[in-house]
Structures are given as C-alpha cells and as structure tokens.
Image 1 (cartoon, chains in turn brown, orange):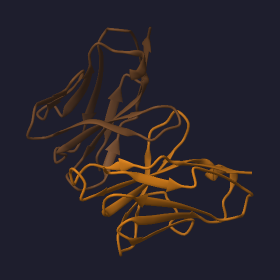
Image 2 (image 1 turned 90 degrees about the horizontal axis):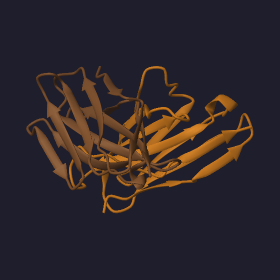
Image 3 (image 1 turned 180 degrees about the vertical axis):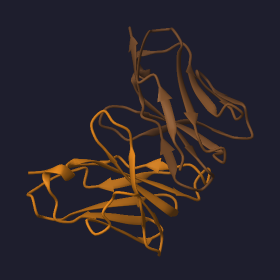
Image 4 (image 1 turned 90 degrees about the vertical axis):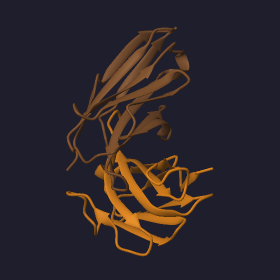
Length: 111
Length: 117
C-alpha cells in the first residue's frame, strides 16, 4: 500500500518568514495530493491540493509543488502569520481510493 | 458547501457500554465515508471505508465486530463502538467524499472525543 513520509515533525519560524514542509510517497499510481491544516481539537481543513498532471499550484500565500519523478511534494507558506500555527498533514491517494496521511508537521509561527 | 457534521462532539461512557457516533453530509451526497481515529499529537489513522448500501472495508488490525459501521443513506454513516474499554478512548473523525467540488476531496467532520471510564 501507499506510504507517505513527512518532515519535519516540528517547525518554528519567525513571523513573516517562509515555511516549507516536505513529503514523499511510495505508490507511483498516486495522483491526488491534498494538504490539510488542523488546529488543536478541531477538524482537518483542506487548504490546497494538487493533481499529478500539474507541477505547481498557488493560492495566495500557500503553494504546493509536485515532482512525480522523485515522488515528492512540498507545501510552501510565505509571509507566515501567527494564525498559520497548526498541524499540517500531507496526503496521497490514487484517485477515488483511500487517502494515506503523513505523520503531520507542527508549525509554530513566533510573533 | 461541503459541510460534514458529527454527533455527539464528545461522550463519556462506562466501560462495557456501546457508543454510537453519527456522521452526516449536510449539503451533498456522500458516496463514500471514512472513519479515522486520532490519538493526541498523532496522525489520522484510517479505520474503515464505507460506501452507501454496502459493507464497510476495514483496515488491517481494526476489529469489525467491535467497530460497527453502517452507511444507510447517502448522507449518513454511523460508527458504533461496542463494549467500549478505556483503550478505545480517542478522537474519532469521519470524512465524506462525493459529488462536492471534486470527487477526490474528503471533507472532515468536527470529530467526536470519546472517553471510556
């Protein structure tokens, strides 16, 4: 089955700096890669996703890149703000199959 | 759009009792619903996948007789934790996927915090 590795497990950045979270996947058939943000005690919220026919996608301060050959994808958050502090999960799936999540990255933005 | 509700939000029960958790898609038809378990500071662990009108598919290591899943309609799935024990205490989250903005996208419920005494 699919295996998703995510790092770092924790990340601290100064407000205004950029944050990068990286993930790798094992199943070359995976073609959908969502990213979720989970605040303490709350549900995971989809923040951005990318499909395998696209190499990069951007939404305001958030961008995701995908390298299919290397089987890795990354989340980039620019101009970080304290409200970006949360746990971020990457995930991979093969179309309509189940989604496999990474272990999560706890991001702390220091004011 | 794409709102998923879960009820109850938290429950405390005695060991040996059964607890039912409901997951509803409020504004879309969920062809597939997923049940996850999340321990503190850990990732989401998939327990089972349910498709409307058919039996759930359980992940390896998940006892199907202990965690009963029913997906009776396109908007409702239930998880029943039977004969709950303290080690079943956890945060249970459902997600739904269907004819929302994108077929692959899962939308999560707010979760149910279960404490078994």
